[in-house]
Amino acid sequence: MQASIMISDQTKTNGFILSSASLGFSTFACLISSIVFLIIVYHLYYNHVKREDKITVVLCGHIYLAILIYSLILLSMNIRSILGDLYKQSFDSSWCIFFGYLTVVLFSMLTMNFVNQAFYRLIRIVYSQNRWFQSLKLYMILPIIEITILTCILLCILMSLNSVTYLPNDQFCHPTFTNIPSILSTAVVVYIGPFCCISFIYLHITRFIHQQGNKQTLVIKQRQARDLLIIRRILIIVSLLFILALPGMILIFMFIITGEEHPLLARITFFTVSISEAGLSVALLFSIPQLKNIVLNLRTTRAVMPVNRTVQGTIQMKTITGTQ
Image 1 (cartoon, rainbow, N blue to C red):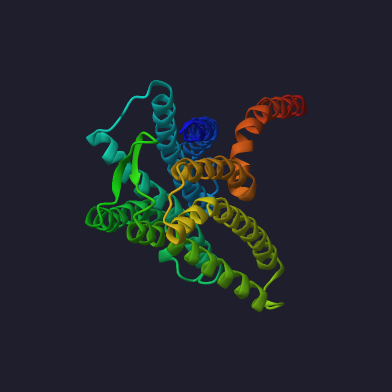
Image 2: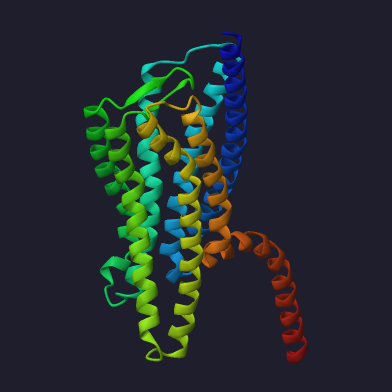
């Protein structure tokens, strides 16, 4: 009996550490994503973005907005877990169930934003003559259409299988990981399906670029080389995200085999997810040149403006002297 209590206390301590670490990573992801998103909005509002880069920047804005909202949800979940561990208080409510559904929908929206980014690169590189799919308005409206369809599909799955429940050991609501039909169906919609689409699209683009050989002009070759480099970076990021999701997947498969649920299954899963969110918010910034340029441009613009005014004043003085 005493050994059981010691194990229980140790498990609670480990859970508290995991939630605290997740809270730190989620906070970091919130800060970075909010700053980058505001910078993107600033540049788009004041029309500081090149016309050919606007769609790429808008798609990045969608990704960072999804990271921001999803990280805020993770933040609230970790706070609830920590308060529950400290004060032994239950937070079960109707709002808790709502946030449980919202967590899944937002994660699916995040993965679909990466699909949209891959789809745009496919159209721009492989099917560049199709102008309709290179419209800025299309990519502004597309997330709204997707989130509506995904919400309907996920609600049908989650509600029909009674998946979202209150997890008393973790103090938040989420689709239970031990409901195998529900978790597998949800994983196909929000994770496996989008991951396969992204991989297929980027592999198709890579194959297309290699098949072009020496048929293109030097300018097109340089642009394709840059696109290929970006694609490789994004594929590395997506692969890392997939690897970080493995601990939770392994624990779920262990439950399927042994029938025993790990007491910290949810916290381990969201710990790796919070690391992914934090890493993603930084990695994207250095993987997409258009995004990196506008973020750095916020600092360089202020430094360049006084110099430009000085040069302009010098030119005016020379003009006046010359006319005299």
